Image (cartoon, rainbow, N blue to C red):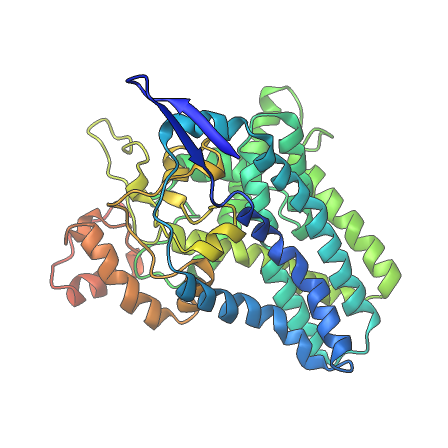
Length: 397
């Protein structure tokens, strides 16, 4: 497919999207469940196959990112409207929804029907939960669309891991307050991912419920209205859980709890690495400056980016939330992560290593001025002491 457009001076340009069919890699996470089942039976019902999803996500993908390198290129701005109108990219998003549901039910059947040792059962729930957490990437992209079909599909795909409050919280909460101390989905310098999770998971849930309550109130309806989109999502999740438990027994309660929690934690990992330590400054009127690309960490690692619909070009996404994934841009002066998201998640799982790599990057981003950093209040004194400065007497954080 070649996109053509005219430049401001009347010249015609032609652009071929070299990644057009590489976006099919976005189906990868949805195919790991059937591949795992195949490995299990191919190896004579060897339970070690149940470790494959974890190894694929935390080892194989980071290795591929290292080998494949980065893609710093952008499509010409003149062809972006044509790319945005090309329905191929939208249909690809739609197609991933049934693929992930198929993957989920394969995973459920496998865990519920095979005589697995307890550790393999837990490993499956953990690994498939991490991989199926990618449905929130799909729900994220669809949820930013303005048409009813895409928004309904976002709600359906988010229900797979029981994250019914995601779209309303993300669009009306996170995008408004991103990279400020007020945002529970923006991590702070010196805050471990585990401390962040304890703040982010309940904080985003409460904010999502509050936004939906307010939306319904303006329509003259109660929180318990059938129009409550958060409750609709959770109703779908509970209905699926009831059927699964009825078919495979109460042991599936354990599987679903671990699976859905890891799906939630997959988003927690993304939120943690996307804005770590970055802070929007307050203007004289008391409001925060508008969101700029520099308020999100960026990475151009090819393989992982293709698997998550360019989510890792997060800087342009937050500055231009309605820009379609296929046209998200790289900029030369952005704060950059050391790896694609899976590699960064592994790094974040070991806080001392994460701090060692990322804290100097945050300080460099802030020009050495720690007052311009979104800093964890509990570790403020230690961070100021470590990096050779004196903490101010009071902090807005």
